[in-house]
Amino acid sequence: MTPNTSPLALKVAQLQFAAHELRLYLDTHPGDKKAAELFEDYNRELRRAADEYREACAPLTAFDPDTAAAWVKSPWPWEI
Image 1 (cartoon, one colour):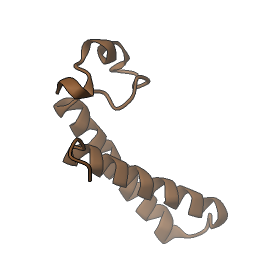
Image 2 (image 1 turned 90 degrees about the vertical axis):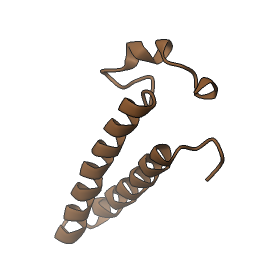
Image 3 (image 1 turned 135 degrees about the horizontal axis):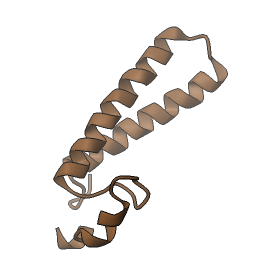
């Protein structure tokens, strides 16, 4: 973890990675119910972590539908 990486940002990145890897696995193993359940669990947790990050810090991307306008108005990462 770099000094400028918040714990919330790290958590979001870890959950994104895990969900993405599971999605790739499910592309080739669509019948694996245990992996599908785990994918849903990670996605649920990712949504919670992303919401928490948005509330505490700033939008995750400029394309977040509810926060696109706020992107320009929020402090830049180096201003936080």
